[in-house]
Length: 264
Image (cartoon, rainbow, N blue to C red; front, side):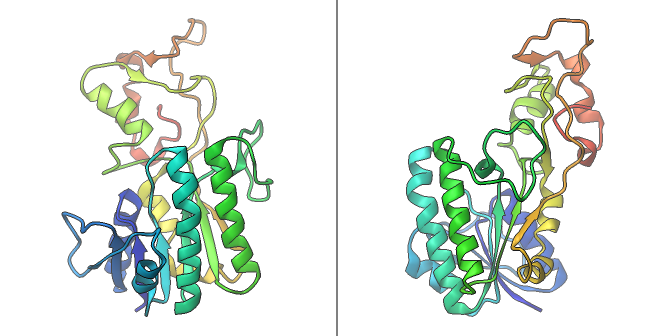
């Protein structure tokens, strides 16, 4: 049994906590406010990730810290909160002797015209990607210097159960269920990955990721093959704003794990 703190209890944090408690680990969830529904057997500790003393208290006595927190989707918030949170987590993990498992995204790789790989250089393009590049350098430097054993698991846009704010849920499935066209917020011919949250949680299994901390410190969550969102007749001019419900009905007909880019 491992002693693990899960920092953040959103869609990913909930799945990770459920996976770990089912396995018999001692799990504490730490975030600013107590969750309305907390899984039986999971403890709670109040914690603001931008306050080092609270992060240190949350990580004290823990063997592994799993970061599943998210901040408001605002560049100004990210520029202020993410570096502070990452430094606080690294210092807390160093003091506790805990390993850090970080739920990461793909922003730090910037715009690309080829499939993404772990060894692509970090970008300076855009405010949010620059922030993700900055915090990537922070944990990679701490890992390389031997301060903290850390691993980041990178994923694309989320979808799955209990993820109502995902692009696929909010603009796709929810609208289709209501009998409205599904919106495509990017060119429908452009291939795009989506990550199934329960799969992401398993990829971030704290035991396995903790062992991989001993290696390169970076893992990429597996997705289904990327697909374009268009399912209309190829000869018909596309309307960028939506797919007609009858042609997009495959979104809800296919098993979720078989959906890669919001289409059948």
